[in-house]
Structure formats: structure tokens, C-alpha cells
Image (cartoon, rainbow, N blue to C red; front, side):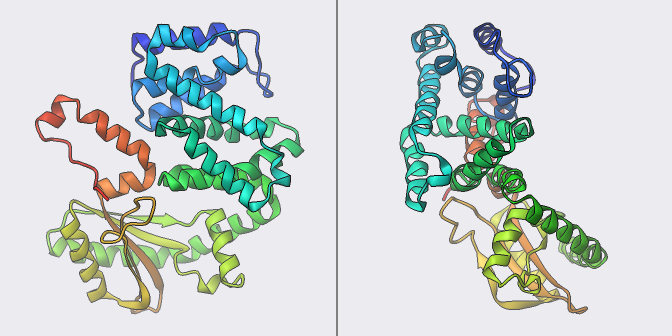
Length: 351
């Protein structure tokens, strides 16, 4: 939201007063954190009650404000969300140290978070809270940096994945991995940059060839490159004996079109231009991933013997792949507007 409503302004005033005299490890006033969470939630397109709860998410646990104070001022929905985030924090504090978690304990913590998040917005607020903490992790001592990063990598990034919040999962995983294994992180980061420089010219040529073919068919589209994240490459290399020559999706070209029918038409055009690799065509539109992700994937071999992956999806699928359930809330909010009533806003794809 571009301009704060009166309710949001009241929440900021309440949080500022409640956190007065409290400071973060960075030395900044504590209110910087809830305001950062507010901005993240706004960027994700969350509704007003969620933004307000994000501003107030630490007040019940860390200040003299009671849940009833929030309920009286902002209503039951906001109070419910703040209570949910407080319960998640309490549950986390009651768990044993992340370094002593057994694999099943980590999974149980993830399940506990989902169970406590009766309203999915509780989890989204918690993810926004964790994201800002990761972005400012450098202010903490090295042992705490590693502890929080490890937990984020093993619990919070998978939670973002379950909610199909792709951009968040990538940022969380890479920020965390940088602290968990800094040498490996820098090595893979340099490897990706080197590979991208080598592949840039051939990708530009392929992009031009595909673009020309799609224009001939009068297809409206956008095409862009997608680079694999550091942590995703780390996991892929582990599956392929550290052999980067077996990683075919290190870079990919992503094509976004208007509708599902055009997705399949584009797939056919790409296969008429290049040779598809056996076993590398995946239809996540007809059979979405468990988290709701939809797209067509194909890996092809060009005439110059370059191997490149294509991802083909609609605008709505792309928005959902990037922001997941946060995007769903945004579209649901839009349904209440005049634009929706006039039929100007399209639905997200149903799964």
C-alpha cells in the first residue's frame, strides 16, 4: 500500500511507544524491525490486518501491551494474528537448540508451525519477521549467525517453499547458506558468475531465435533469463556427484504468455526449433507440484549443441510462482475492488 491508512498509522504509533527504549543488536531503535516487517508485508501485497499485525507482532511478547489492548483498538482479526505469531515464537523458544535437532524434530517443528498457523497469514508474518532478521544477521556474533542461519535453511526456507513463495525461498536459502558454509557459498557464487558470462552470448542468440518465431505466430510474450540460486546449485551438485556438466538448468529462459493454450503452443514452437532432451519435458500445468507451482519445463539441444532449459507459464502462474500464497491474498483483495467487478482483473489459476 502506497499510503498508510489511519489504522496502520495508529499501529505504528502504538508499536513505537511500546518498544521505546528497546534496541536491536545493530544498535538501532527496536521499532526499525517491525517497520521493516511492515514494508515486507506491503511489498507482498498483504491485506491491512496482516500489515497491522506485522507492525505489532512483538508487542505482546516483548512489551506491556496485552492482547486485549490490540483487540480493542484494531479488532479480533488483528489480535488473532498477533496471538498466532506470539504462540509460534513461544513454541520456537521451547524447542531445543537447532544444533541438537534430530531430522524428525526439525520436521515436527515445521509441522507445529503449520498447525499453530490456523490462519496462513500468521505464517506469512513469521516469514517476513525471519527474512528481516536474516537481512540484518551480520550484527550478531558468529555463533548466533550460524545458529539462526541453519534454522532458517532447515525450517523457514522449506516453509516458504510449501507456501510456493519462490522469491522468498531463494533469498532465505542463499542468505542462510552464506553463513552456514561461507567458503562453499563464495565458490558456487563465483562458479555461477563464470558460467553465466560464458553462456551469455549463446543465450542471447537463442532468445532472439525464439522471439522471432513467436512474433511470426503473433504471440504476445515476454522472455527473460533465470539464473539458478547458489543454494539450489549446491543441492543439485550433491545429487550429481558434484559434476556441473550434468546440471542442465543452471541458466534458463522463461517465457510468459497470456493463457494456458498459448503455453502449449509455445512449447510446440520451441520443439520445432530445437531438439528436446529425453525425460526433460515436465508438465506442471496439467500436474502442478504439491505446493501449487504451475509451469511447462523443457530442456533442449540447439543446433550449436548448447543445452538450455525453457520455462513457459502465464502471468498469473508466474506471480504465484514468485509470491505463492501471498499473491493469492493480493488477488483476493482485488476481488473487492471496482476493477474486479468490471472484469479487469483475472483470477489466479486454481489447482
